[in-house]
Image (cartoon, rainbow, N blue to C red; front, top):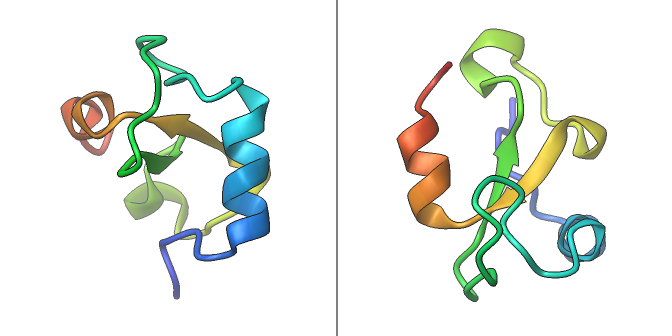
Length: 66
């Protein structure tokens, strides 16, 4: 099972969803932003763009597998 969002079109849609801002802290997303699973992948075992949000690396890594 793939846990990453590799599609450039889907990643672009996530980025546009928050106008290039981190969905958690609101900072401008860096080039290395993460496509974050709102419900941790280890719990749901699926990657669905409708259940994801754009996040800066710092916010995504702070979240852990909650």
